[in-house]
Amino acid sequence: MAKGKDMKFGRKELFDERSRDYPLLLTYGQKRRPRSYTWRCNTRLDQGREGACVGFGMAHELNSRPAESSVNIPLARKIYHEAQKIDPWPGGDYPGASPRYEGTAVLSGLKIGQRLGYYKNYRWTFSLDDLKAGVGYHGPAVIGVRWYAGMSAPDSNGFIKPTGRVQGGHCCLVNKVSIKGGYFGIVNSWGTGWGDGGSCKISFDDMGHLLSQRGEAAFCLKRTTKPKP
Image (cartoon, rainbow, N blue to C red; front, side):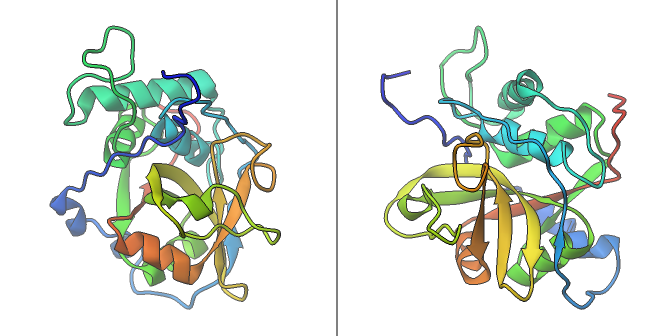
């Protein structure tokens, strides 16, 4: 890595059109009235200066309710490296990879988590309202979005804003929805020294903007704390 280079971004955009055949809302019927909810995630891992956000975003999901596991940094990196081996780009950041590159797709990370046995399958949401319903009733969401300069640090109220230039692609976890407050809560993978102990907020309008720009949000189904690959 080049000295001083910020390698915290690592989500590469990849969308399989077949994912549209697997929306989350089909798993629990018609939409319900939106509700506020927070899925506990006591872990705050730090991906350091490598583009491993997909592995760490997945790790935070696996360490959250409704099925809290104990995924540590080495396992988060394993998910990241294994995802690179199945994504469509040659090489990666794992030992022996050629050519060398950082980052991978959220879809590839989801496939690895499934292979490791942490959940049976996964589903997608494609709109802001569906994301609200999913976090409100089903569980936390793994998201992949474009990360803007204005999102590098939360403001005094804990909010990030998609303003300025795009810095890269990033993967993180949405573990909270506040209907009255009009925002989502995000668990990031930049350590507890960032934001509010490693977390931040983003308004519904700003999240809608990110989703409209090739953003993605996925939910893991039939989670377990005792994976069987």
